[in-house]
Amino acid sequence: LAILARLRALIFSAYESEELNANMHFILEGDLNQIDRVVAKCERLFTSPIPPAMSRHGMRSIVLWLAALPVVLAASMPPVLNALWCSTTAYIYVGIDELGVQVEQPFQILPLWQLCHIATLAVEEAISSPMLPLPIKSSAAVPYPTGNNPSSPGLPFEDVEYLD
Image 1 (tube, rainbow, N blue to C red):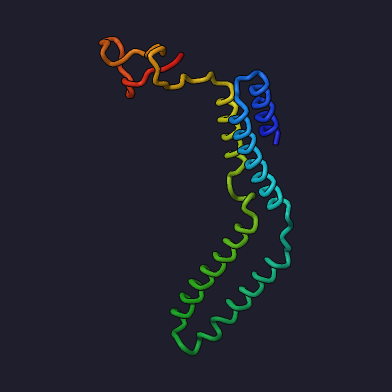
Image 2: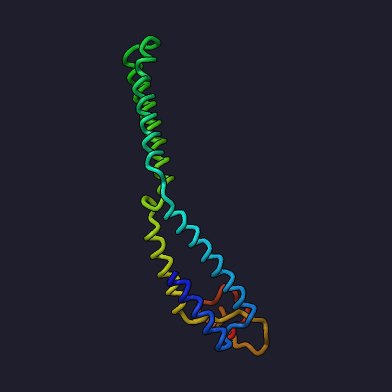
């Protein structure tokens, strides 16, 4: 939220100093509003409680089912195959339960803090970097050096002139 407030302040100061026209200010402000809505939805997801009884009930049901499985399969297959089949089934169902726990609490598992830190650094770098030249089609523009000069490596868009 602090980054959004800082971006809004920078956009407004650029608008006040007439470095940014009204249309671009409106578009950027709309984009910041969309980002703000996404942040609010993520915070709502993060703060909504998950009932612990739901996870406990699911795990107890799986344990009961897995405990009864060898008894049911004992008459239909040899003991070694019964043990192998029950172990495989237990591995699969307990894994599915663990995936369910991870889906319920994604913020404890996903590296979101690291991603937010990287995004913050990228935004700060973009804000502090100087403006790059804009390509234009005009005879009044001063062109950058092209590949015709042996001392310059050449640019990929040699027919475009740039305004400094």
